Picture 1 (cartoon, rainbow, N blue to C red):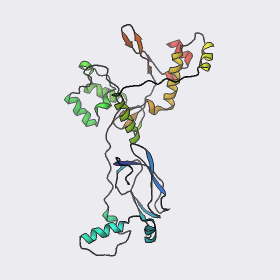
Picture 2: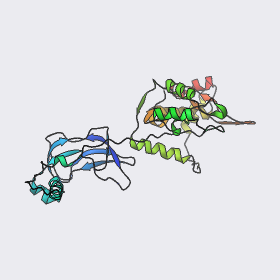
Picture 3: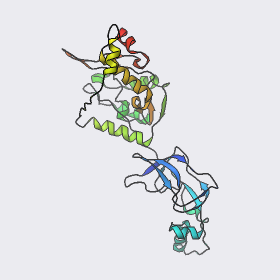
Picture 4: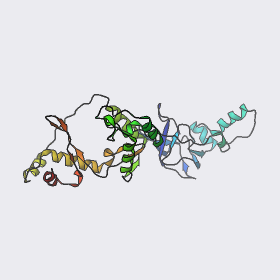
Length: 295
């Protein structure tokens, strides 16, 4: 695994573009990898024949891990200036006082087996709304360690303990509740995005306003009886977008992105005594007239 960036220590294999026995040329892209910053290709240093593939798709490898072995002629190696495995083995043998006829294929034993990288667990929290909700008891901390979870992964759970604290019972009920929800493995880039979004809650927030042409919406609204509120059109469009891009509505538990089974949307409404949040259920499954009739 080459050094793909100054701060990148590992990368995940997304796709292998070669097979055993394939002939490749210099600078040919043979592997697609994903880091926590981008997706990119790994190219060959010289042409030759693939004689061994050790990399597996979907697995993370540390920089420097052996992903495969390419057999090339000395002429090809000299022409491209690629470092040979024989040069490394020769240096090792000379240090040990040994002699021998070294070849490109004979030095496989000088490499260690690739080591899998244990990815860190990250999550996307929701800001706690109650004082004391961030406190985690020793018992709760021990259970989280058993499950490989961090504080960020439980921040979206409504706590029933004192001051809104999440208890072990709350955690177990939540995990049981989402057991049969659809989920998918989070890629390194997805984990990095989630971590950036988590940190963004500690930064000043900014609002962006954009003009929108609502003529078609207003024309449709004029034909309805009773006329739906414009907010329902916005919610309906939002729900459709979420259903078409489910990753944007998912949340992280450990390294799994859990996808919701239904799209319920809450709206913060200011009232005299504060703010209330009415929740509209299954917005993606209801048309605007149905939403207007029910809400």
